[in-house]
Length: 271
Image 1: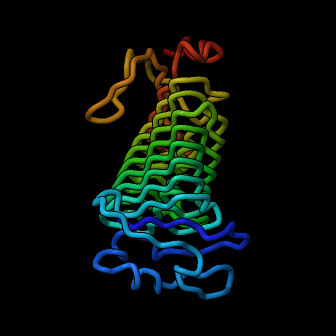
Image 2: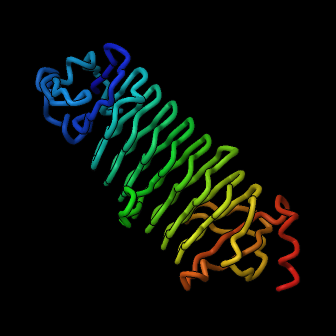
Image 3: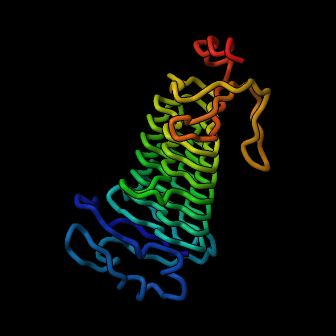
């Protein structure tokens, strides 16, 4: 295992794609120390920004101790291994991840898990905007894997979701969750904001807490006693089931807790 510790507080963004189990594999500490990073527009060696130590433990592959909230692109495209971050982490964590596991014992900034394909990301704090979402103007959303967030999540998360599972356990989720999603599952254990599932064409969003609104382009279909999250988990309801987004001729499903949303009772007359 390689242990990285920031040598100081970073005041400029640090692009560090090299912090990746696939890149570190087969290299000794001297070779890892010479890997290239950029602090702002200055090219530097990894050893100029981090203390690098080798530990005898086999797992996790990389441990980062300290605040790296200005360090971006950690674990980009990783296929194997495990990264544990004991602190906050910067943008684009695990982007295009294709395997392995990333654990964040802190908060994650924007675009964590963007365009993810496989693997597992666990964030034990909050996540910023665009969780599991592609860059603006792109439709290459998350295709597979699993993301679990213990805290709150910002806006536009799960946009253009094509597969995989996102579980959000915090009290609040920003607006436009699941924007234009076509497949996959998003499970919100507590509350969700406005524009839920806007332009979705497939997949399902499950909200076990309170929903501010259901967009008028969704139609109520039924009430279900429970809903399947994945092959290992189901959630007890009852849930209102809404279909849409009809503005996109979508066949997506919103499962919204009946008990926690008495303001939606008026939809029952359409059943």
